[in-house]
Length: 487
RNA sequence: GGUCCUGUGGCCGAGUGGUUAGGCUCAGCUCUGCAAAAGCUGCUACUCCAGUUCGAACCUGGACGGGACCUCCA
Image 1 (cartoon, rainbow, N blue to C red):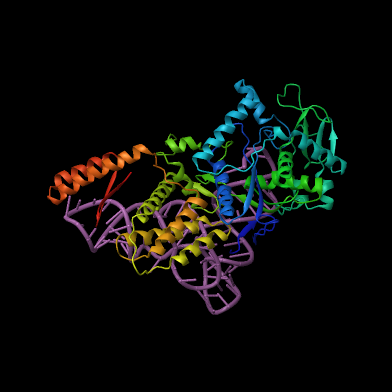
Image 2: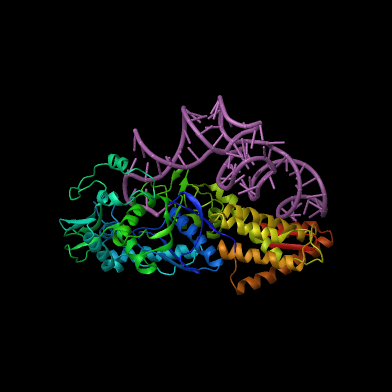
């Protein structure tokens, strides 16, 4: 197997991937905070890691993919002040916090299923690991790198930074961070400006709270990932991922916690996916420019002229590298939708090709190109470019403009199976069992009647059939060996 | 204000010191009763200025534009 190269945020370079204990791979991705519907930007991140997960599986790795659900501890601001996001929503909606959690967790899973993302191996929750989080906080206090004050526990960043590289992930200078961190209200419990909370004292009205050695409270945001990754993947594992917006604060603090806890950087490779933008601006809940997946599927959004299917959206996202920003627009989506349909039509055509004795295309090279693209830091846009080469070959062979052998057809089927279905996770959309068979038969009848009319040079009838079918969203395609159709 | 990233054809987007990215759009051709589909061809792009080089869109410096992070966010 060829070497897989992954861009590692720690080194800012592409590095050859070497699993700690092959064929096993441990992979942790920071999941959503379930206090509202996931928007499309969130989905992009998880789809990017879905491709990574799928490709590692395809290469034969046994991957344990852990993606958490943040159902407590994520405050409105990162200054460790303000309300817990989920508690706040619960109060507004007059629901139990766990009702909020349940609603949006289920919604998140449903959406990811629509996008055909594989479920992670383990999907642990922050509330299910309160004890583990407290244990880590205790240990860090013992090591002298965290302190309790007034019922809360804070990580002592400046003390930690004396012996460790706190800013390994960002390459920033600590002094600059200290200078530039803004003063926030309500942080008088902290010793240092960069200190962050491991445990936060709960106010009486706070809904989600647990007893602890430091009194009743709730965990800080960053510590949940340290607790859950350590529990399920060990103190050191292979890959850790998340959105780029988590790099500077969340992941930096996560590393500091782990190093303080057990002296080890948790993951060897840190991967960060870029943002989805709308008109050049980051899509985010706080900016109010976010798209919900359902709005996209139905087309019910001011920026959209029509709806787009989950697979078309998935393909759209694959056409950009995960480390580039992806700008969202109606035109770009429409273009991708066509490309996706072309890809799927060619697969149907492939199933009807008749083999020749000789061939004039090097499909082995094509397959190799596909692997090379993916091995180069999961370069799906280049992979897709190669797949369009395959489409050209399939369509040309169908037009008898070039020839493929039986082995070529098998190879093309493999390429589709491996890269289109297994790795990119695309699937055919219109399949629906029985009614489909009936439709096939009816369409055969209609096209046979039209062929008869054409043979009789009754073009008025044949055109009427074609036009009526077009109105019904069915496209008729006349080829050399008769007509075919697609929706 | 600080740190970092980025600027590619009508649109979206790869890429990289000398060789076609790819998709979509548009135009022409082939095929076809016509159209569509499909194939072929074309629209020959790399913000600007200076430098390094035999040669730069790709390296260096500067200018201008856009973005991210430093504050909740995937």
